Amino acid sequence: APLPQAPISKPSVQAAGALVAAAPSEGASAVLLATVGSPHHQTRRGVASLLGAACASALELPPPQAAAFASAIRALVCDTDATVRATAASAYWELHRRSVADADAILPQVQPPQQKLIQRSKPAAK
Image (cartoon, rainbow, N blue to C red; front, top):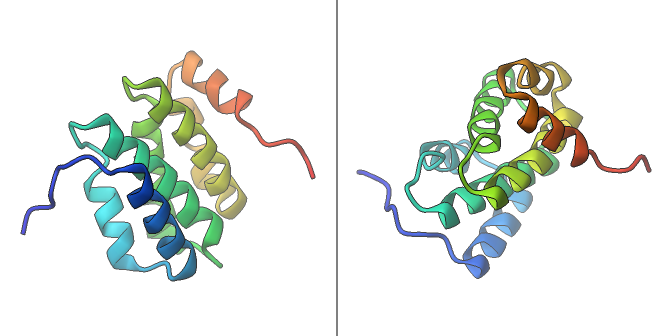
């Protein structure tokens, strides 16, 4: 069945984030990846946020999933909406913590402004 294309509300993103963090699953990942190209910027913002949450909560990312997340983050960091781009740039660093090679592969595939955005969003060392 086709996925609904309605925008994701902020409370829905927060609830979904809690679920993704508590119990990551292939099904949740499939839904996220399927909605990367949504016509609604709110949905794409939610997807970028949830990709970051999924990367942050995963004990490990299997190589196919890490590659799929990298592809989605690459697309979202090039989005027309500034908030989507910024959220995807933050998700990049969550992916980087789990799969350096997949994250590093994104950088040469995006334009210099997106590369700079990613670098600016790097979290401070703890």
